[in-house]
Image (cartoon, rainbow, N blue to C red; front, side, top):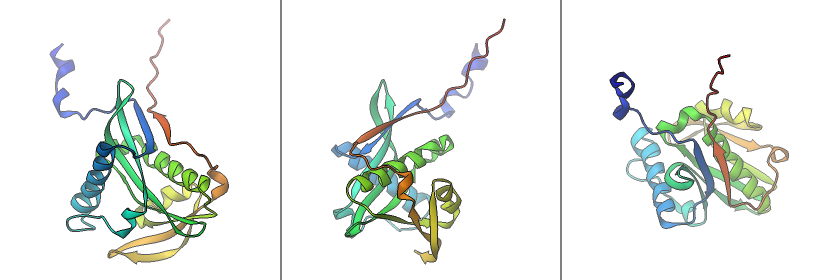
Length: 187
């Protein structure tokens, strides 16, 4: 019995359910900014103390939160969208908490929610400046590179989403379930 409980305190809690939605409460917005700060300032050191900029004043924040008993509990993913010019929307500051990256679907669902939300708000183009190490991930999600660039001293690509792959919607949230391993039946 003790062998089963060994190292239990060292393992991060990974929930089976996530909600991806427009950040609407103070705790969601606080978690959104804290996660961005952790990823872009502490982990990647792209910014010194804070990654906030003028876009935050007009951006729509979107979060992924892990759920406990069906209720959002902690922000583990973030992205923001804004209309840069009429019909042209941009996504930026995509971040997923390190303990939840292995799931692999949180970032994709944040992107889907971001692009489909903007599409529903009238986007005719959706663009993002993507760090070079994430370009292949975005290509798998039906984005194309418009060219390489350097941003904050790091290689990036300006990329465009294929809007035909992101149907417009007016949903303010979606659910994401983590696949569970199947229990094998023994005859």
